[in-house]
Length: 118
Image (tube, rainbow, N blue to C red; front, side, top):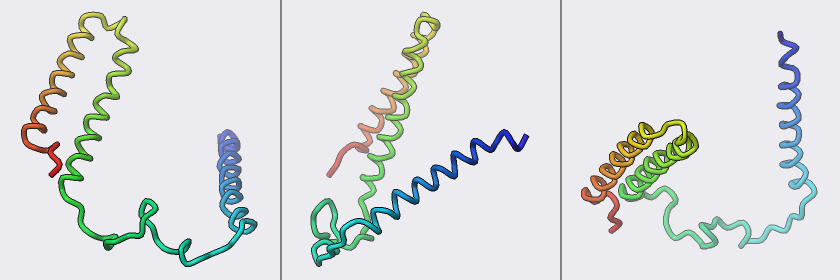
């Protein structure tokens, strides 16, 4: 039984070797011309003007969680669309109920002000 895992072991070893090569070779053979500008920390191409450990507004996290929630819910539409021919009217009604609950949740979040960015 352990012989069945040898191809998997070889795959992991090859992946590790190629990863190590991809990291080591450019650092050894690549050009090294450090300057003060290149060594400075940057945020999106700009010099940082705040401490990196500052607090983010709670609204940022609320919008992020809502995005993830609704994004994951929309993923469930794809398998339903693929199987719609087999599900017939029952599947259409179930997806209608699902989308209705999704819209109710969206309206609730909107009315609570979770989507307002002040």
